[in-house]
Length: 247
Image (cartoon, rainbow, N blue to C red; front, side):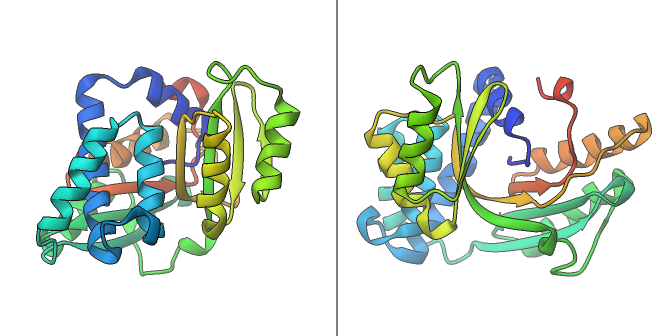
């Protein structure tokens, strides 16, 4: 699951138990299969596959697991799976984008609508909230995992083609255009940099604070139900989650 929160990525990575890792690896495996279906199994000739492989490595998926998934995808017929995106609103007008990968569009739509409804939100029309987000390559470097100089990391990233570099309390954030993600990711990886997360994602242009306990419960209800749904691959939102919520 993806949110806008940089802190969330690191907290989830540190706190991930075996069950959570299993769910993440299952989702990543499906992303690998779709990328292979769309562009073939050769990483050198499939930019989408390279992006997903980078995401897998940042999630600590073993290389042999990645290779097996790619080989399996190359020999399997994935034509019954399709990518579907839903957009809608949570409490207090929060914007939510849900990316699903499903072999049953009706089931996915029903479950996702139910998740929104149970949290007091609603699914809207395509495009109703996506204009509030930017499609960006995002790499998060945990300060506990990187002992080098911040300025050197920034120059390395910018020289490789990054658009922006931000230093947060516990991490560095590197942003790129989707097209430049591969080159920047590879340059940093070649320099020995490891990532808490690395993916092409949707980043909100502005965030929304939820001040009432009821709204926070409802938003967590929506996100929790979506996280449990096997058809859901990624969820993006513009809720400015309190740091203490990210455990």
